[in-house]
Length: 345
Image 1 (cartoon, rainbow, N blue to C red):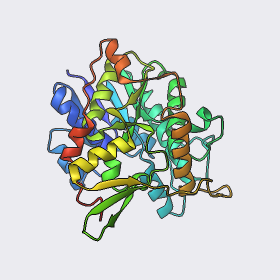
Image 2 (cartoon, one colour):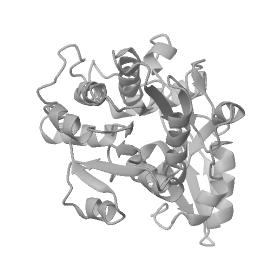
Image 3 (cartoon, rainbow, N blue to C red):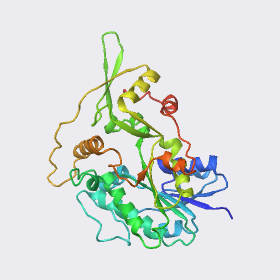
Image 4 (cartoon, rainbow, N blue to C red):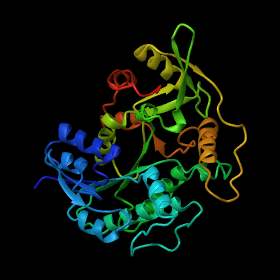
């Protein structure tokens, strides 16, 4: 029987990308896609392509035990934004199921403990699968550790890093895990996420200029990733390579001002940069402050780089030198296919 790949978050950006890549490039591999809402239109769309869609919830350990049965490969990730939204909607607290670990940090902020526990649920359920050959976890740098505690509020990075550490130390799983540290999503700009949000100015002749206000220097090299096209290639590379790899998921390095030049060429809208955030992070009084997170993320990237200087993180070229091919998209290709019509609205 052909190998089975189980994809957590099958209707999400990373999960759907992995599914599509394997369908196009590794059609002999069976795919099981997990989602909390298998009756949704998004899930139905995935199922229509031949994927086995199964209901599972990262907060429900038992659902993961069932969903992972027979898996040879698992790709898993957590979605900080969704967790923040869900925890806020219920007053800052949601259940992580019967398998909850009391050692997981609690609030503040509430989402950190939830996200870590979700990742631990994935690890604990995956460790019970005898057929498992590789678990690929979508991680990020341990900002607090890499900065020596200087930046201690980049919770969406640190939660994923805490899960990676747990997985690498988990008995029965430690020799089956690799991580992909996904770079900066190219799609974040088109979606208008605050990190890359811009405003526009119109001169007396009616010409628009985009004003970009990233919380880091425009000249800082950024590891951009085409999450829609390249995520599956990184996962396949980590399945083929030996375990315990930590791969930077980068399609192409480029400074933001170089990126903006490309963008202006495609859209015909001029670009310029301005400082938007205060030089000092606002006080949080021990609570969660999104602006502080945004500012600390930018400061960390500026001072330590996207991976924090972690020597264990390798770039795609290193795996390619060892014989693992990793096809990647050019930023210019992404630029021309994206719909930029809403960016300046």
